[in-house]
Amino acid sequence: MDPTLTAADTHVSSVFFAVPFDAVWPRVTDPEAFPTLYPNRASAIERTGRGAFRATGPAGDEFTVYPHLDREFGIADVEVVDETGASEFSRSRLFPVGEGACVLVHLAVRRPRLLDDEWAAHRRGTDDDLRRAKVVIEDEFGDGRKG
Image (cartoon, rainbow, N blue to C red; front, top):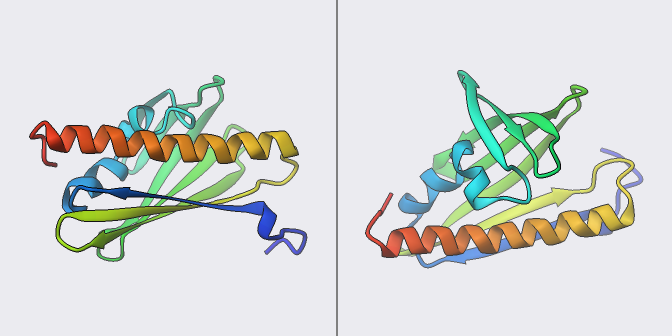
């Protein structure tokens, strides 16, 4: 672990879904849904092979996404490999809350050399994306598309 990281270099976001875990899980773990759910992270994504997806970010940057999932424990991690081959993990957990709800928790860790204003924008974008995912998934569930 990088000894220069501090608590200020982490950001925890969470969102409550008034939708059962079983309906939320397939949406938040499907990379092809990321442009709809998380537009601050991906504007386009397509499957490129077994377990790999090629994505384009909102600024035109390209990266490869590898999901690392464990439904039993609610692990919805994504490995992101940029054009230079640098890899980082996007770590999320989905927790059931009773029978009809769940909570998604996401941990962001500041990347090396990320400027303060870029880190602030990353945190805001993450929070905005989780709020958007909540609206989209709850609307879908309410419309009868129950996962």
